[in-house]
Image 1 (cartoon, rainbow over the protein chains, first blue to last red):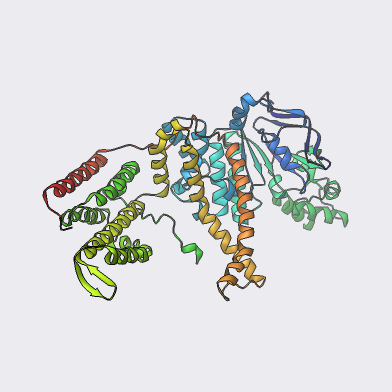
Image 2 (image 1 turned 90 degrees about the vertical axis):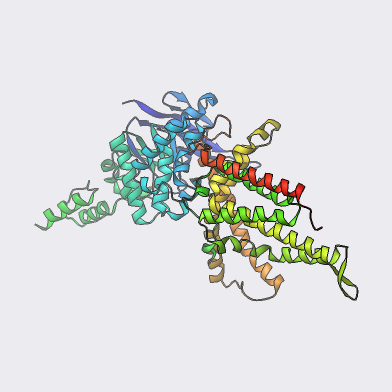
Length: 280
Length: 270
């Protein structure tokens, strides 16, 4: 598979005056393949957001390099090509909506790119249908719920037709209903439209749906693998200050008590099956 | 309570006036104000008065709503009227000690009052029938020639859009901060003027800090969506003049001509 985003020996430090610089990312090698759904996990301050900001040239490496579709992000000439290719959605939906009407906001990126008005209209309608918000196109953003606002923010990014969407904790400020809506939208985007997705999250039940999980700790990638591989290492995850999905935790504890359950349970269905077998 | 504030006072509708191009509405509103001040005699006032009443009727905006727009300006209107009544010289009508009221004074005051009231009503009709975003677009388009003298037209319009976008958000936030401070024992409802002003400080400081934080995040999100200023930018919503707009302009032109003719042929009292 083609590497859409490739980071090589990525170092990043925040430069401070009169004080020692803070090293945030320490020699990271990571790649995200075309069409993949990657979840990036890590506790607060692990550097996962900083890593994500390198994917579309918001931040540039102190040393090492990041390639997006073969183009170095440090290349100023291709800055807007990179940002068009890798869209970014942030945590707070309120702080990324620019316009006072939903459809105007979705059009914002396309207007910046200088797309023709009729084409903008077509792509805005399409993007709004993709996130299932078409009927709200003439609403004001402040009339919408958090989940709806976040879907508008996603629509504003996918209207650019990016190859990859990076979402930086998009569900952190939402209620459970909003979280489900956003997660479903993200999964559909990956499955039905083939968009590459990098989802930064600290909800393990979201990471379970990914093709691959990357765990970041102290500015370095510590483990990568499928959700099943990652979450079966319960002790290692706890050491890193991370949780595992509740069902995994349950089976892990049962196993510790000597119950014969498999140790790679990550979904509720698998857990139910394992428990039924145990009780049968 | 803070949530009830509506911004721009826009009343959505589908009347002829609503459907006119915002640029034309803006131009006609300015023309209307000029017309009000061009009126030279009493008969001439009939034209702008009838014009506005007809426009309000066509727009289907309740007349009371338009009148309400005048309410906040009432003290100013009274002040102007009083000044004119007492200080315009001419034939004395009533003499009370050192105060003289003249016929001329009353007429001048009356004219001034009519002008201000209709000026306010005219501009309220503009904001009642035009959404803030359409108005911003219109201002951006109309001021575009100023780009030549390096006036940042696009930036100004973008600032207006963002301000409009964040007013409800910040109102909500103010509400939250007020509740939070009240929960910590802040007293905002008692005390004199100074005390109340001081009580605002614990609300304004968090509000400002959060506004700055929001601005920073918004700037980042805009950059991620390829924002690079007005150059090479297109717009999804294109403004088009329709026959409606030309009719509007024609009506205004006829009214203006009427005012000028009346000025020439009908002698004024004062």
